[in-house]
Image 1 (cartoon, rainbow, N blue to C red):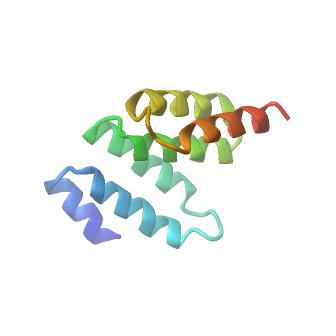
Image 2: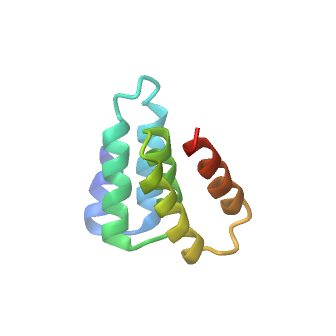
Image 3: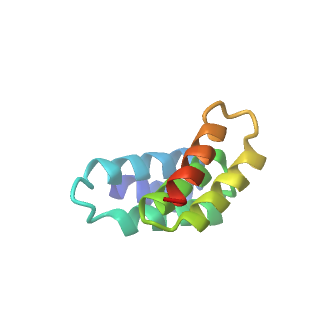
Length: 101
């Protein structure tokens, strides 16, 4: 994990944020890294811009943490950024249904 953080300082690229989030997720079985994952996704968006991966994963994070409004907002922005993502429409529809119950 630290290696990815070190590389991000020098080379600000989405791929390194993807790897960092993946590594943190692998050690997050108990949920203790949830805030770290959110912060890495937010930092990635601030650093490299709004990408489909970062927006969709942050949307999923919000949905999983009962902030449906922010989750759906991030999905909608992702839909503008990557309108051809085959699963995004179903993710938005699913979140909309889950959030109303």
